[in-house]
Length: 247
Image (cartoon, rainbow, N blue to C red; front, side, top):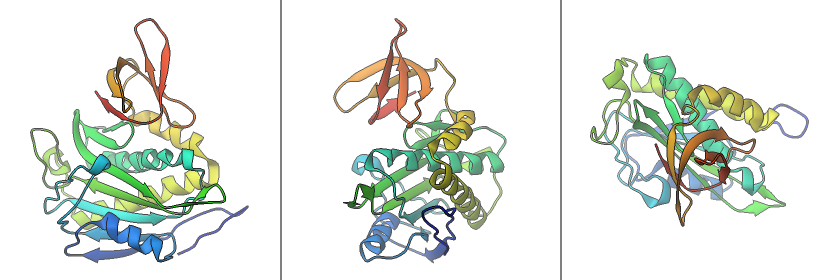
């Protein structure tokens, strides 16, 4: 593992551990973070018994899919932690595009879709803040490779993927390594530039829930910090910094 700070370029070499069964890869990484392990630990479970997504939702852990969490020490301000989910979305979209002929869509803030159905979810959980910087982040990825609940989701194998699970995993880890290094070394702007290829079309109808209210408008992109921009019928823009969207 190489971790260089300050004026030197940051890069991460993953230290991969694979388990046949875990309750949750996220819980494993969070415990590792709290006991002081270095950035770069990556944990894969072939099966999870208590996988979860955002807001405590259960993540269905079908055999043959990718369940992966990594330990990051991002040295970022708390208000920028949401950018980690977006750089992970970029990495997953690049991975999916390399494996099938359909271009995926990154749905803000933490999903990847194929033909409008979910194929991947992202979960970011963080530790404490020291001197204005986030001490650690557990980044969890669930990618449907071989199976999915077809009424709401889809998987790569339905679109002709024939790559083995370990190949998909390694491709995702390499894409994530590049995206994370880009973000740490150059900030969010170049990540956002690459992400544009995978975002919904401008004007696509969006219904956003900000935790209190629903807002309906057209997708107007992401701002320089990664917040959602929603354009209403009268032309005004609304910035959504947290919540959930429906497209």
